[in-house]
Image (tube, rainbow over all chains, first blue to last red; front, top):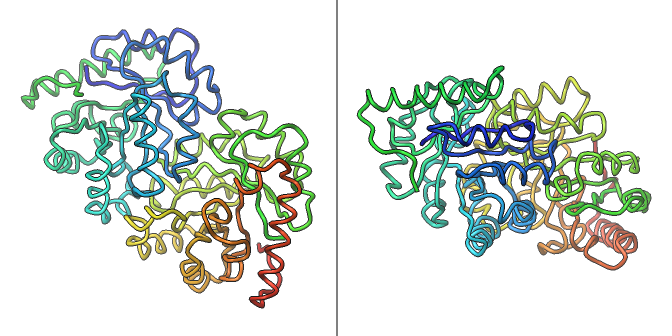
Length: 224
Length: 224
């Protein structure tokens, strides 16, 4: 079970539950556009429907007090929260990490991103970003399926961390590409949700992941 | 008029309008915690109350499609949108800039931040960040009042850009510190909103800015 379905638009009641029960689907990730449109109540109802890993992905990148106040309504409903490592420790990720620890929630830090522009600043800063990851010691990190070499590098550097990889589907990476490079979960949004039948699409992506893993010799996935 | 009041919690109807009419107040900035709790309808009502500069500050830091979908409900209601420069151009800020341009809205890019942790990755990456700012050519940039040397540097580097400076008040910078270093607006949140009388507190901060400007010899402020 290595597929996280990204919800970037609000979905009708029941669909998140159906998606979470598809074999191979590990859980859902709720994005900022969906949470703003659907509201906190909608986001909580998605979390209630899904037994798997529930991730809030706002790509938090602010000072401690703002990030804390942003995640607060989702604590107790979601399992993990994604923030940017770029903002650094003191006055930013330190406070967020403490809050999540005390709430029994997991922190996931973006190490770099899936789009071309990640080469402008994020990639050249990777050694500094890695030092932030080391110091903050999050549960997981985000590394791009579109650039599996970076997934391998981060897998080697952080053997104990769960790796979540976006970029599969609409952004060009094939299902399984990141898993074969060492990721624990692949995040897939548009190529599942922008179809007439998201449940069937999720089933197909999960099956494609399985096939890819079989051919690259990957073992048990879905970490943590 | 150089004071932007940061709303990080939803405020009751009418208060944003009163704040925007305080002499010296240039407008309001709505943060992510407030927008999530208050909802899109609340954020639009704040914008309707305020005749000044209306800024959405979600510290956007994602791929183009997600950032576009995040700002879309606020277009036509808010004037400017804050995003992080570190996400880079292609596949991220390029798409956001095009969307905002076509909607007649302004882009503001964070150049660096106000907290200590900004020294971990953001500051050492400043030359790369500046190159992104140059390429994207936003209306404004964000630089921290807590570190006026950086405001001066960015003022020199980008003479035509509007500079917005957070960090005044709760984070330690004194009113006027960033204006004297070359900023156009100072963003003040908690030391106005976490008082019993935010309107009076805004009046006092604006007056303190005026006094600071008079003593540092600053001229007309409130750019754009």
